[in-house]
Image (cartoon, rainbow, N blue to C red; front, side, top):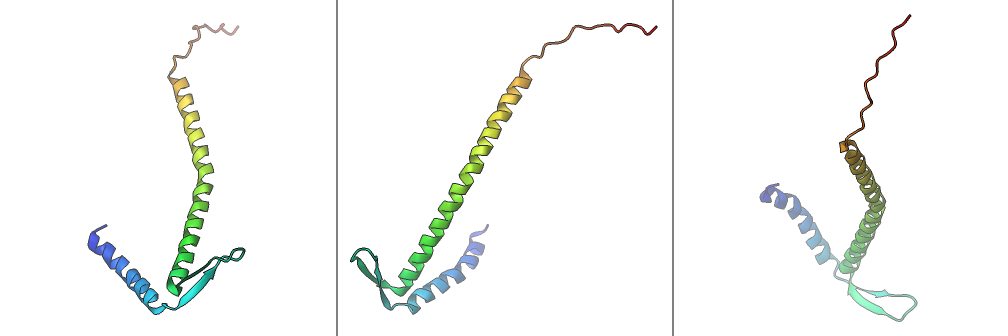
Length: 103
């Protein structure tokens, strides 16, 4: 993909992100319930941070879900390699026999 096309696609999203951050500068306090931890952060950072945590959690779940498929594919490839090696081994040949003639 050419660089200018990539920038043409990314630039509007960056502009929207910058406008979102500049529009939501109010301070909110994030608290962790069982403790007395309180952290004042700008609203935009709190929202974008929550979205980033959600994206990372979804990516991890997807990655762990794909691990089973990758493991099955690796087992299938190993089985195929073993069967191909078995096919490459010389096969015993049967002696030629003659059939009795029909009477």
